[in-house]
Image (tube, rainbow, N blue to C red; front, side, top):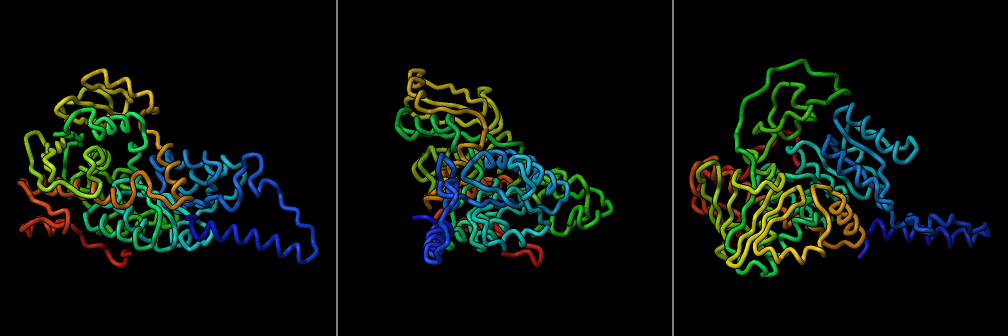
Length: 426
């Protein structure tokens, strides 16, 4: 089923043609509008905007701009320098001056012509911006982590489902060939019965300090209050808005576990065929590792060290007949090595988001589920948050995937959500 907006454009074009014929005026419509010679018909073109675009967002947007079926029209960012960078980027791509800049994302979300938005703000804005976009009738591609609390992830998934929006979490490794191949080996039984999955994580930290106060810039240069958004107030420091917010608990998620865990735990969930659930228990171990266990007996090991040197963001899947490990370099090691013979069916390597953005736009058109839809995001992110809470409490916790609450653990349950600074609520 096509989206109402795309279907509406077809109806408009058809109706316009009929009206012109009835008026006796010539009904000459440019062939490119109707999709001749490989051009995308206007009725099928996806109109895209973006909210909060920094370095990673530019990488993703750069891939999106290469899609001939997409027209990028507007950037909303609280920082003038970033607005101007993205406008130059888009105008240079299209050879015009049409990209519109907004300091207020609500102006972008109010545009009826915008079908979809890329959300690539700081982590503390991802969930709220995505929720507001969905309520405004937009499909959403959100950078990860998609929510900095369990409550954010739950509300985000619920909203996408309630409003029928297409959602893609920016965990692009689901669309990268070497990771897809490793998951294939685990899910197809080529490794035998799966018993352990390993996810790489950063060194965990839970920093509640503040940087020194600096004079706030002019609101047009950087709207500091809007940059903070739902996060607790603190004085301005340029380092925050330059990307140095990472590692500060008010802006980060799950003791930074989700920086990589949102990718690697997600892949482990996929390998274990667990997209609709989470592990039941989480226990801190030596060296900052966390051990979790699923209802089917599979063990999830979140750890920093002991990898084979195959690049950043490595994962490892072990069965009773073999194992496979891979990372961002695209290299794969496995046992038995004869399994490598199947890899010819799986192309691609590294962290390139191109396959993931293409999947998103395909699903915007078809209304199918994306590679990392709201529900799979929900469960992988909940698993990461539960692990981080166990680490912060320094003890084992038990989690019920059905109620999405910790079992008999008031302290852990209080950590599932955070208060949002007024008036920043969905």
